[in-house]
Length: 596
Image (cartoon, rainbow, N blue to C red):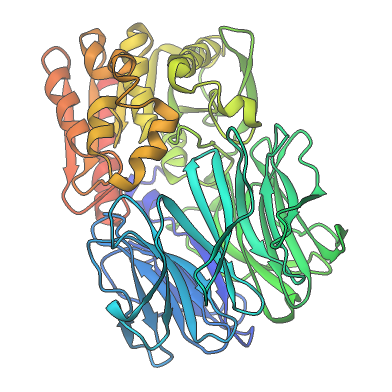
């Protein structure tokens, strides 16, 4: 039996867990209604209760540490201008921020549950300030405690609720950590440095230190403790060959959970802090794949975490911290498709133009016929993203329809060390496109693949890679799928959200100094080279890659190749609403059926 695309897109995901103050109720996000909403349950695999019923996506939910109430975030039409709301125990919802033109990024509850912190650009769209607000305050009653000059994120309250961690991002690979005194407003800079250094995933420890991951003086991220008074940095766990990418600490129990990204797969370590050492517990028993989003229960005796794999849609598991024993609590449905219908991927490597090995995940459909199997090359966004072995209903649909699926992590991808991530910076941009060519040449060598039926597919920066691959190497492609992609780096940087421009210029080059180069690598200026049919999809409200990128590439390309377009007026950077996703991906399937 062949299942329609709609069934695959009805595979649900449960993630973003948060334990209630008593440790019995677990909240999480699940997309059963078509967009993520807040749900909860009281014991494993129970019938969950739904608490929000909006037509828009909920972006996070965090229980108060003292009361059975939680803060959640929601934007409108994918515009990413998140507002904060309070969900009370009786089910009523109070708007907390009510500044629809501004973004609000939650920074955690105080330990007594009386206040919460957030960063917002409500004063100036290009910068983020830090606010503290009482749980009974609304809108303008929030207290501005620090005026920022850039992209600020609040990383949580100190154990005595007197200070906040504030991280300032200069680019995706360069951050600084500060401590903000709430009473005086004094901001103490703890990480002065030259060059680009990452300081990420900050968490207060029981001793008042800050636990985080960083790549200072290292190619890979490692686990460290940052002294909140002196700025001294001590190594807890070396990065070695692979990044330590996330850390969570329970202040009261001194228990810690951190993850290592090993060739895309998550290895999770739980333990107890002992000075600058971690006394490790048995490894958590989770499905092979990707895990993250740790939330400790009271006393740190257990923690909730989302886990997914090639053949496992995302569900929330609860792990007994000291033993590693885990149990799946949520039961996100698979759209009635048997789990054994889903296919695994294989981790492979191919050699690029400079003899560098490029990692990729490769999947073949069952009983793939020799020389007759079409292939989709799915290129991730970012550009500092990383394709990892997590569940994808789109991939599983196309595998079921007889397509091979190829997911390269070209140079510039995260997960393989600092050097690798910078191999595509500015003037080296097209080297990553050359990696795509090398990947396609590797596909040509696979006996199952029909080299005349290969599709370029990608979203966001991956959409740029689709367009660039089709203009640079037009003979490789049977069709292209560009989802919310960049067509012109100049117009993209001119029109992207003001709060993002500086961060993106650090990666791509600046309008002031690199305009000529940006024009030279923009697919719109090489559009006449495209030879294959193109499908362009975008969201009208996209604040990252404005919809004008789709409009200009479609207008120019259709002068000489078949072009289809699909613009959703109620979506932003990607498609979150079920009806839109069904329309978009069913349209893609029909497009490929016609041309591939």
